[in-house]
Image (cartoon, rainbow, N blue to C red):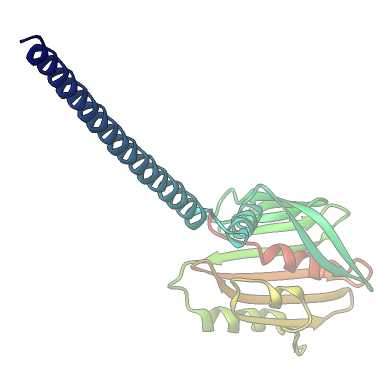
Length: 236
């Protein structure tokens, strides 16, 4: 009877030990599986974060303005600012000066005026831009709408130059006005007089037809400076 109880006790202990081993192995397998799942999740999360960061960098690069755009913006700001630099020929040398944006009191245009010059209204639809050092050196400015008769204005300009019987010369290629941007259908004629030169110009710009008449003295030689300012005429 004692032996049977002893064997029964040993059998029960063996069963408990086997069950405990089974439970430990099962828990170990579960722990390994959980660790593998967590590692996989971490790897996927890291991959997603890397892709998101790459996408942000690509988007930033695509939307970033290039240097050409920055330069264009700078150029536009300089062109439309309250001051700008003008270059013109006087005598045998090239001159450079600062010009201020000035609006006509009577007409619907603005012009950049160099230091040493003054813009004033002469009569209805006519302004005068004169040289402070000698008011007999000046440029008359007339502006007309887009519906103006360009051919008639050109004929009138030439006729006024040749009124006293002189013959005007085509000097369209001799002044910087011909190289200015926005100028269309430019005609420049010049008549030599005893005092100097009288120069007329007609062109189309910014939806306006513009007629300029310059009265200059040989010793002053301000024609190119005056025409360079005339090239900056634009609507207010």
